[in-house]
Length: 127
Image (tube, rainbow, N blue to C red; front, top):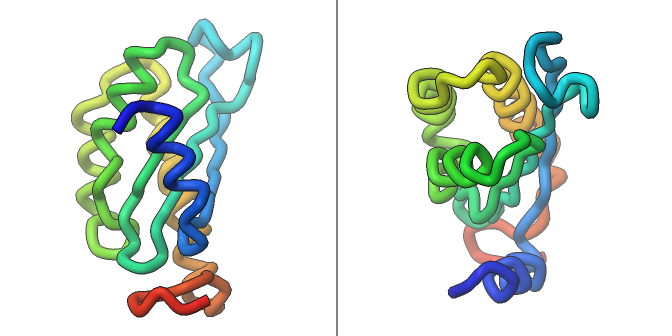
């Protein structure tokens, strides 16, 4: 499935929630003057906790695509430590610490929603 079709399918799924996290960028990175903060957004299917789409405010398409490849398909409930470790060890850019912090904040937000029973759907797909 190609880009827009895939995203439209994600949007149509009532179980998918969007969580975001942000972290301060180091002064030394190129995007600091434009953004000052790095953002991570995850679309998560609440039926199984899988990341079905991901995005970040990293500057280059390659860095964004690399981040997506690292996290999409993983579970925000079962693979938390592995997700963080994967980003920490595989993304060696100057924004790596901010990227990891923003990712952790997304995971924390999802966990808070889950604990507070504020997520739509569930394993059986009920609303």
